[in-house]
Length: 168
Image (cartoon, rainbow, N blue to C red; front, side):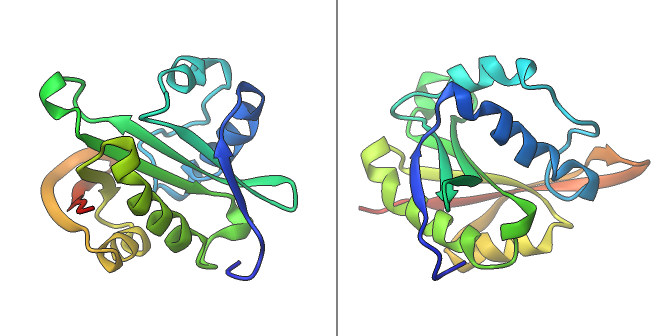
């Protein structure tokens, strides 16, 4: 993946079916999302429209195909937290484990000052070791731990809140 040319751009509404397809492809693993069944494109339209120039939704293209997406969202929705954002990165199954996640996380960190983000958060299941290790590699630390807050297939799962202060 490191030698494939990629293009990152703001998502358009026409991209939403592919964004949802990539998201839905992660559900069965029970490692990435707390959704337990596929979501519908229609149900994600409000989420799509909640993004803006300071909290963009971006798609990643390779060979003119969307292969990943990045979402920045406000944390907790109160004005005092406006400089803190949650990031989500989702990769098409054919691009996982090839270094694309690292490329995108590095790009996201560099982009934070222009988005007025001083603190970047990621909410990760503790058993998702590849994601935890990826974020640690880029200087994220455990800022929170919520034991047993999710139940996936009758198994209680912990949620780790990883955080990093962004310095210009």
